[in-house]
Length: 598
Image (cartoon, rainbow, N blue to C red; front, side):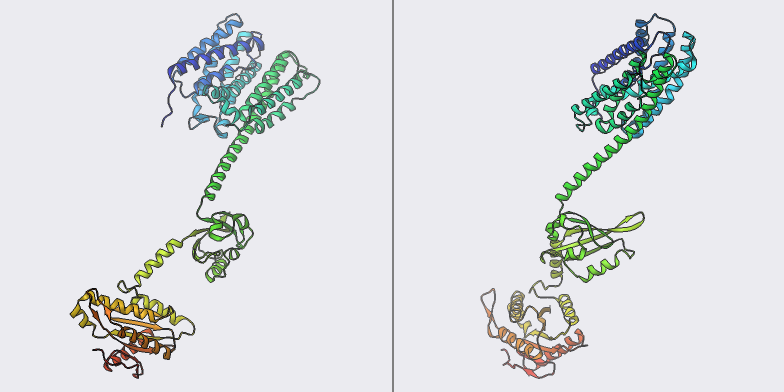
């Protein structure tokens, strides 16, 4: 969005105020710093008009310059008798203002003049040296011809007086015309007015004490005080402080007093020497002040970012830890208390494995290899140290300093809900949708894990419902589904959590019973009885009696799952051949024979 343009009456008021200030300041400095045959010791008018031209809302620049030309002649004519040379000097003053304004892009950033150290230094070079140097040559030529004075002395008077006017008054009046003077003076409240007033008063007292006496060369005192000013009252306050030194020094020097009177020369040269002193002081103070203010602004921005970071960390749901190469925590922030059970302030100086309260093989391996390996990042999932019900994800990132690995940043995130969803999806992909038992994939995963465990001891059973096709044909497929669900429930009821119960499809079930062969046969015998002894109620109100046949094969080391399934299937065939409703072992010995189901 574009800033609203000020109304015409406001612009006219600023123009009138600027021209009035130009007239008053010009008349005063001509009256008190010149004898009618030389240039003023300081010329604030050019800085005032330049500040007016730098105002965003001003669109009457050419008219302002023309009015400045007339105001300049009028101010000189009021104090001294009019001569044609007034027109030449007025033209040179207006030309200087126009030239400095033409280079505004070099000392303006984002539409605001003097907003950075670079723009301030650029302005010091343009308005303090380059343009005044160029204008001082014709200015000294005009003055030396008009008043029969030394060209060199006239040149230095022109150079210093216009430089002072531009460097001192332009920033202050730019702030004043822009309505930001009090804001810039107090630096948005960083410098209270009472403090600024006390510093300026002390600066004025020091300046009076130094320049009112002629016995000691104490010019270093104002310089030292001015260097300290930016740290105490900011850049705008330092500008006012320099104005106090300048006005005090010129007033006493014109009156024949001050440290410059120790130099045995005429009054005119002492005034030039004071200008040289002030000019050097200004060029010393301005860069120092700009750099200090730039550093201070940087510190403020960093402080603001740290506050924002602290606020973000307070409300963060993650924990962020910084470790050195020895895996010693150096900094902690975020939700460490909820994720790790330890407050942030208690984490520094602790080692990662102690913080996680684990000797997890993956964690230990990563700690040993992360910094020496080529990997830049790594991710681990472990149980939270303070509660096993929470799963946390550790995201590791290397930190580099001067091209070498200095440590790691570990971001810790609660992934419990994601893990539960993943487990749920995994369960669904491994579950039979009708019975809720494991399907083939789920069985394969569980049985592989069981085989890979130490001292694996189990028996594999293959179960088939007897004459199940007759139930579907006679009662319908819905009744068949009910029968299958009931069989699954009764099998699950007779087995333990450590057993593996699955449905391979149709009316086929496969069990892995984690008992020895004798106990597995007893378990299957109970299953056979539980299914046959109690009829199954259908949704139609009818009941149906069902039986199952089981084949069982014991596991031995080195035997594959496929081989066990073939053996159990062979035993199942023997059970069916023996009359069904029974269990047969792979040895073909009939176990728990039952009367055939009718």
